[in-house]
Amino acid sequence: MKRIICIFVCALLIVPLGGCSASSIFGSKNKMYKEDFMTMDTSMELSASGKNAEKAVEESKKRLFKLNDMASTTIKTSDISKINDAAGKEYVKVHPEVIKMILASKKYSEITSGEYDITVGPIVNLWGIGTDDQKIPGDSEIKARLPLIDYKKISVNEKESSVMLKDPDMAIDLGGVAKGFAGDEVLKIYKKYGIKNGLINLGSSSIYAVGKNEDNGDWTVGVKHPRSEASQNFLGILSVSDKGISTSGDYERFFIKNGKRYFHIMNPKTGYPVDNGIMSVTVVVDGSVKDANMLADILSLVVFELGAERGIKLINSMSNVSCEVTMTNYNVYTSKGFKNIMSDLNKDFKYKNLPSK
Image (cartoon, rainbow, N blue to C red; front, top):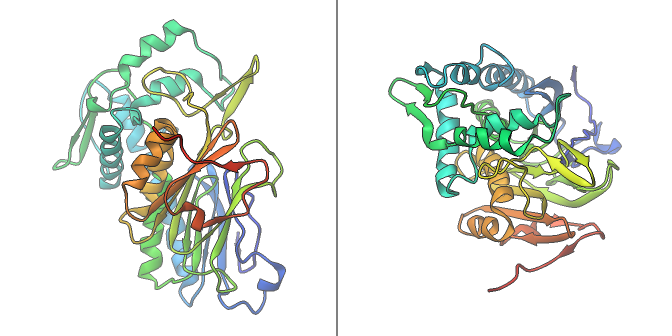
């Protein structure tokens, strides 16, 4: 639905707040053209200001639908479905965009020694968390599928733009990278049309703040309280400009049985949900970093799976990247620089320093 008004978008994990006040609807410094729609299984909103705002948003929307057609695991004609269907049989020619996402994912699988792995599909499908078939699988079912989880068995032929999974029944899932990649593609379109201010909100976990908000201030983004359903109850508020943000949490898709929470972020080594005391991770990447949105998307999962100490150590080794890690005991650990952009830490939580060794 096309409109040039200001709305409040209640996302599941991170919520855009900046510029969405009644006073900014009319007479704002950066009047926004906005459009919201559904793709990649989530509600999205694109905002842009300037004379080419509508063209930028419309072209970006078409690009997002095209990327969904490439990377979806539920569309049978997508590149990912074709790769998975041909597992153990043959190479499949795919779009260069899919090659880029797979290679970026493999890079971080190497860095984490396989603790981040896009071939975890068979385990994700076995648990079915978030579907009508969700269950706690038997140990024998999990053990039978663990040999299928191995990023080293993704064979990529860049010259031919083709991919093959070496073993039958393997499956890849780009759910932890595709929205980030899509954000970078939208940003390219915005730059092509000279868009200096806007918001790329790709649903519940991925946002890129372009320039300034309607009132010519930094964009403000609320990070969801991991244990509260109240829409206005945040972990904290981020103030950002020209930065990509991604959040991963144990509250996005989950079920509770016998008092234990089972959620969708799987440990590729064990076949069970990650169990390291983390509730949520938020990563912020500066726009000066190449592929900032895709990197933020990948890193939020990487840090979640590595754990607070190893994850923050990795982030601290990178330039123009920062993060926070929220633990189930309500302690919050941060990398260098993160407290400079997050304010109003919820009273339920406390900043803590990582234990020194």
